[in-house]
Length: 130
Image 1: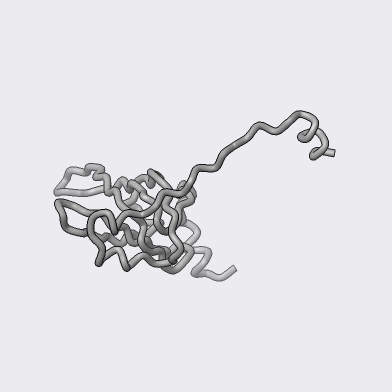
Image 2 (image 1 turned 30 degrees about the vertical axis):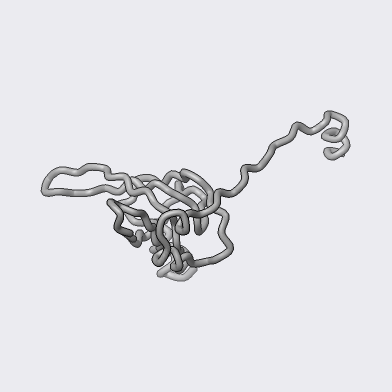
């Protein structure tokens, strides 16, 4: 195995949920102020993901007091305590940089329809197993 890859595996996080571009997520960020530490939530839309592996980053955009704010987070950073998926977005682009120039309703992302789980008839389920 490559030495760099073996070293990087030590810092890889296993508790990252599956999320995609256009999804709204809440990131719990550790903030250190002097000798105190607190958790600050940052909620926004994922507009980009770059690289892969341990070096992967995500760009999250939110509107704060009428001003667009973007932060780039390293996915496997120790300052990220938790990532929660709030809602799934339905987009057709890999990068959503066009949202920077939109306002109000135009900047809204359509929500992905939920998957409908239908019960399977017992005879069909048994036939599928055989």
